[in-house]
Amino acid sequence: MFIERLLRIVGAIFFGYIGLRMGQFLAESDSGLIAVVLWSAPPVFSVIMGFLIAPYIFMKPLQRFQEWMNQVRLMQLLLGIVGLVAGLVVAAILMPALYSLPGFGGLLAPFLVSIVLGTLGVATVVAREEELVLFFSRYIPNFASKNGHSAVAGQVLVDTSAIIDGRIADICQTGFVQSGFVVPRFVLDELRHIADSAESLRRARGRRGLEILNRLQREAAVQVDIIDADFEDTYDVDTKLIRLARKLGCPLLTTDFNLGRIAEVEQVRVLNVHQLANAVKTIVLPGEEMAVRIVQEGKEIGQGVGFLDDGTMVVVEGGRRHLDNQLDVVVTRVLQTAAGRMIFAQPRS
Figure 1 (cartoon, rainbow, N blue to C red):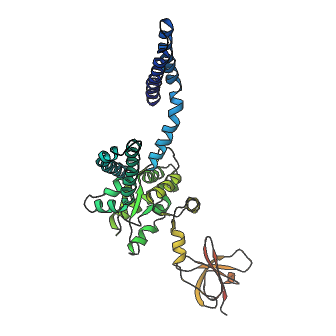
Figure 2: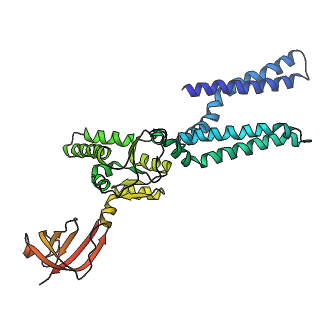
Figure 3: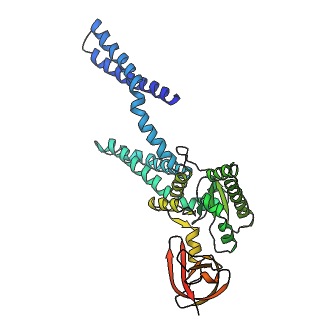
């Protein structure tokens, strides 16, 4: 309401001024009562028209501008202003020489040079954003995270599901992960809501997620940054994560299959913990022998099912009669599915 009233006032002043100039122009050729009417009628009409239509003219461009500004990082905005000022300062230094140009060139050249140098200044400074952020991060603690920016090249944005999964902490302790993690404030809020849920299982998952996050901050060798970046125009956490990953230019770590697919459609790089677990599982070739304990019946008649130490399912033909026993088997084929790797085998004897 405040912006709408402000736009109405500004529109009334703007259109009123145009009407005033128009009335003065029309009244120059007449005198008497007609001149008074011609001089006063256009400003009054213009003020009323500006007060009524100004919000409809300016509100939509203003909303578009606000949406665009929400997508711009604070560091980019500040660097853009610095580059623009630097370009205009250089243009101001050249103004005396430009005004001395003969004819129409003396009027047009200062305007064009100001636009060109201002644009070049913005483009030059914003293009060095990563280097400037890394430079200031050496001297100002948490400088990058406070500005909603990845502090280290290759830093990873973490999803709620990856935190609750817990394997991320074990992976970090192995030392294979060198880059840091970024956890948005809205992910912490989602974890808190899950931990406060009335459902016992959901509450346990939320509390586990908070414990894993605390463990990452205490024990992990990588840096964990909590940033306040948010998108108030949406309440969906998955949408916020995808938009934030695009804004920061960093990959998204998750165990949510659907979120990963949507992120890939949005041209966001996805790191899935399940895919990593499948990639590091033991490679088994047909013809190899192994020992497996049959723990349950299979779907087909006579089948038995066992599991390797890494969780890989082994389906043994004719293994049902060896239920709850250790059995030596020979691998017949290996099947890779979306859920993971499955091994089919038969008893060695």
